[in-house]
Amino acid sequence: MSRTTLDLWVGVFVAMGIAALLFLALKVGSISGSEIQSPYTLRAHFDNIGGLKVRAPVKSAGVLVGRVTEIRYDNERYQAEVVFSVDGRYTFPTDTFANILTSGLLGEQYLGLDPGGEEENLKPGALIKKTQSAVVLEKLISQFMFNKAAEGDAEPAK
Amino acid sequence: MGNLFRRLGSLAINGVWQLGFIARFFWLILRYSGQSFTRLHLTMRELYFSGVMSLLIILVSGLFVGLVLGLQGYEILQRYGSSEAMGTMVALSLLRELGPVVAGLLFASRAGSAVTAEIGLMKVTEQLKAMDMMAVSPIARVVAPRFWGGVVSMPILTALFSMMGIFGGWLIGVVFIGVDDGAFWSQMQAAVDFRYDVVNGVIKSCVFGVAVALIAVFEGYDCVPTAEGVSRAITRTVVSSALAILALDFVMTSFMFRGL
Image (cartoon, rainbow over all chains, first blue to last red; front, side):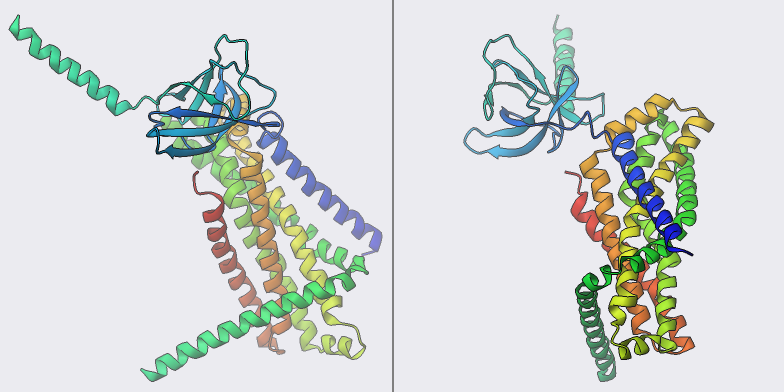
């Protein structure tokens, strides 16, 4: 085989490889939309983080705006401290509410941000004061059961 | 009893000796690579033989793996009413594990064995010695181009394999079964992370490429120069490549994906 045809085939081969990689990057994974640009970090304390994990999504109004980067235990407050990075394009007012929510009934847990009405915005590294912990299903069920049991006891006494 | 320990000892010493020999051989290849790249068409030729000629088997196997994954995935997912998630399943299993591993195994048996046979036969017919006599380094002239040909083609073949597999899954899911096209792609895009899934798969395939190419050229260069020796060397190439790929895959998976 002559050298030019060989070079041609190798060139086609390499071009196919690059095209396949681009396909995997752009069509299969979405490199464009979901990547977080020039992120800044925020912090929040929670009584209970439930099943929240590092790399869990941070969403506001259902749109992905960041990711959880670190979860640690604060031994002075006996609370969990969640550190997360937020896309630099988005800013949130200082009275933003941070909730730990679940997508669907059995889905993964994520951090939801509900913006408040303050004029001033959260600065990088700031602490979100208003938080709501994860809903633990067992606690909810046991509360419900105790309530029912209490009602059951109360009725015969009437 | 003493005999048993003696055999264990000789096994261990041989293993270490072999490992040292491979490491020195690897170093030699890297040292002579610059010299062999001055005649780039040698590497191009090897890229053609191990890369372009493996295209058919890689593309066809990738398609069939994707088709099977699509059918099996649908079979399980439709029980839970989430057949749209099959795009996610096909893409993630191909990108993370099946793409690099299966492409690596196919590459070892298609191209690795051919490289071993070629170098082994050159040794049998004393071509390598003749080169040495003419002051042409056989490492730079024969071994390094074949090594780099394998290293470069492996990630490309893996990317093509994964792409064909996803196409196969799409064919079964969307065209034959009738899963919604938009849901198929959007769920896949939501679940597949470029850095976490695609890049880790590419890293895996590069490591497998180095392992397979190194084993193939080493076994060829190291073989006993007889007809039987060459055939044994080819067998060893395929067996040790497969074991190396699977073991390295486990090690890398445990580092890359631990469900953080």
